[in-house]
Amino acid sequence: MKHILFYPLLFFICSCQSQDNGLKNRDVIYYFKEAKTLENKERIKQKFAVDSVTVSEEYLDPVTKKLNAKGFNKLQEIKEKVLTPYYADYLFLKKISHGNKIYALYFTMPSLYDIEYVVFRFDDGKWNNVERINRALSSKNSQILKLSWNYDDAPLKMDHKSNIFIENDYLVFKLGDICLSLYDLRSEKLLIKEERPFNLPNLYTRENKEAWVRENTHKEIEGLLRLNRN
Image 1 (cartoon, rainbow, N blue to C red):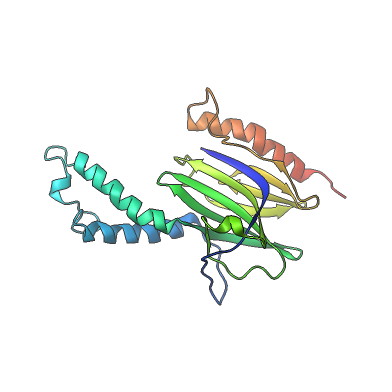
Image 2: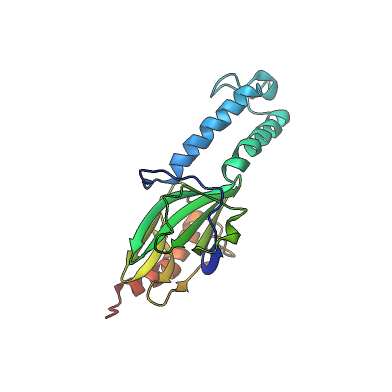
């Protein structure tokens, strides 16, 4: 489940990596594949697996051939060892320019099952092809603005692509084909935010939750995008 917020919080870029030739836009799958490669290496190193697909017999139930309790605990231990440091940073996804500012979409995974999307604003001259922004130290940033964050808890939409775009002088965050947040670039204010829109009472199925968000948040954002602002 997810929620979108657009709040002005100042951040400093710490412990980051940059690329001289500029960063190319990418999706979360780019990082998932890299993290999976690291996890597979650790599985083999700890003898949990003999290769990328074959789990060692001691971690399998002899009848079902599924993970036993020992195997489940070992796998969780390996995941935490690899993924916790890997996702200690916000990871770059996309950037767009507007005037003298850069708006950049990042994501991280604060737990093994949650995705957090963040939109940062970099003022003129502050963008430096930053691939990683350290999460723990980023609150000390005085040069960039954190505009939004969105949590996808035990992701319902991990398979959907995230996106930011500018239309009608609004900055929009979109997940799949659903608009979730609207930031007014003229007034520099958040106009629409959703806190956990997919965690609604009495809406237990993915279809019901998406239908509610489409009818409310998404529809409201689309209406504002169509308005004449001249």
